[in-house]
Length: 313
Image 1 (tube, one colour):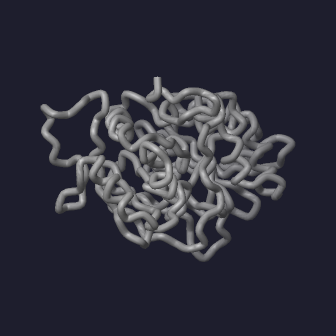
Image 2 (cartoon, rainbow, N blue to C red):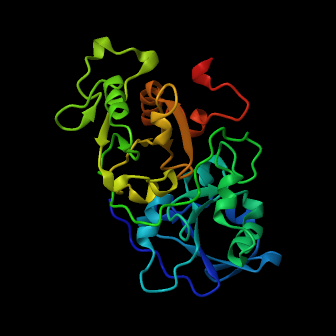
């Protein structure tokens, strides 16, 4: 799957991109009414904030995800600090629009209340609010200052200042090693997940009759490459090739080798790119299975502060 490049906004404008069309028509849900403002052609000027949103419609951007956005920004021009997506969750779920970071950690995202979009964008563009502030103050649904409970594990917001190559393209899950200090711990992790086969997969050759459906095994392509050392969750979405719908990326990081249960840091690629859920490695297979069949959403696996995780109940 390939996407057309995004248009370069005029100075002082922010792109608002529709990523869901039907019969060639852009679907915005109730978003444009909720954010208010006045129309000037393809630009929506938001009230007292003065924020100018350039509406971008093209069916070629259908199912565009936050992690795909950095690669579509025109090179050589002035890179905007943020792009706003009106995705299927906005159209049919009534969620707030997704803000995609293009400055600090390109590709990560945070949702904001529709009615506050102008206020929040004005603060971001004016430098009184940083994207890191949005990340730190989002709830388990990925909503900035939402009332859906505080995540027990917050995603790091200080990126490594080096670039990473694209991750392998797969329609399954990826298990990516990002910490290389404990070789014995890494081998123990792979053994606990059933061992890696000659093609680098864990869980690919299990007998269906022997699978415990309560602890569904993780089927994932293993990425054991020092190129990805110190990769942070927020950097992951931009590294996922758009050709396949990767289920999830699980990071084997320093926490994995230091805490009981060998917890993996799982990264959301779609609803709120870069958001994390930290689960014991034995539970990640069940998460991947439920996400793949649409039985559960990512936020249902995010452990809430001061609350017992569902897998401990």
